[in-house]
Image (cartoon, rainbow, N blue to C red; front, side, top):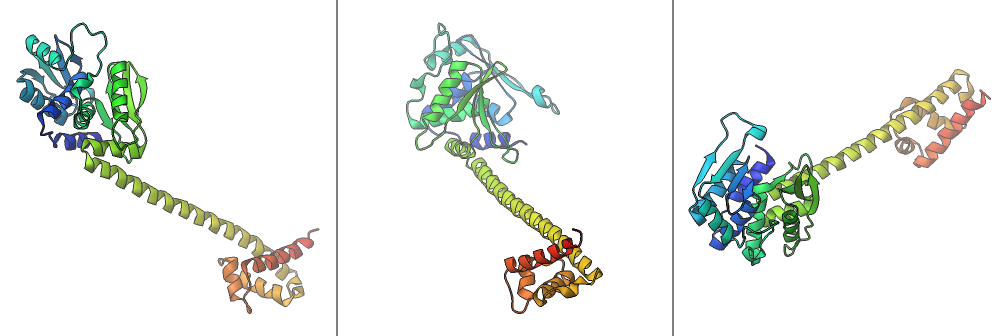
Amino acid sequence: MSFSTDTKREICQKLSTRVSLQYSELYAMLLLSREFSPKSIVFKTENEHTFSHFIFLLNKLFKAKCEVTAPMRGESGKNRNYTAVVTSPDKCRKIYERYGHDEHEVNLRVNRANIDDEDEQRAFIRGAFLAGGSVTDPEKGYHLEIAVSHRNLCMDICRIISEIPDCDIRAKFLSRGGTYIAYIKDSEQITDLLTYMGAVVASMNIMGTKALKQVRNTANRRANSEIANLQKTASASARQIKAIKKLRKNGRINLLTDELKAVAELRYEYPELTLRELGAMLDPPISRSGVNHRLEKIIRMAEEEDS
């Protein structure tokens, strides 16, 4: 089951108690139906929970009978569609006119009279998401969108989302294959919108996944940094030991001062230690830069033989 499916199921489980909110929620679902006109209402979705919710609201509010088509068991993808067709033309006209629309309209737009207050606005957005929305699994990314068949209707939905009180949510707009998309890609705006619609569990899942990703990224950066430091230390140690071996082989190791000889012996015996660790073993201890300075002198002495 997908993250979107779980999110829509959570929203459907929280039925609005006020009848006016049920009308607002159904209104959004009708606007985003396959067909919504005074002659025909056809609702289609791949989500079983959304479909059951639509049928329930349509029957409760308008006593509308529908011809229902459900997917066969085992069907998947584009073939897995639930379809509801309102069979009575008179009922289609009654529903259309109830929401303040008439057959002479050129463009389907949101009639704001149907979403008078903030609660009705919230119910409308819930319905729009149920009918045309989807949200990406946060493990894969952050993306919420609502697909709409009419450009101006999509712009209206973007505007309504931007008006949500106490939230700075900005739905963007794009056209994709003849469909218009209102979308959000910011994780915080997505969680705010899901919480606003009542999908609190889905919102918390996104926040939890994001926090886990941040922990993983921090751990990976630290691990990569430590690996890089180890590689750097190993490379420098190999260069230093090579120089010490050369001085030992030609007997010039005895020409070193006591300080240099002490560092050379420690480095030769403990090739895995850092410069700071080597410095702590000397008597008296010296700093990391002091150890590095002495080893550089040893390397220069070994290189003098080649010049």
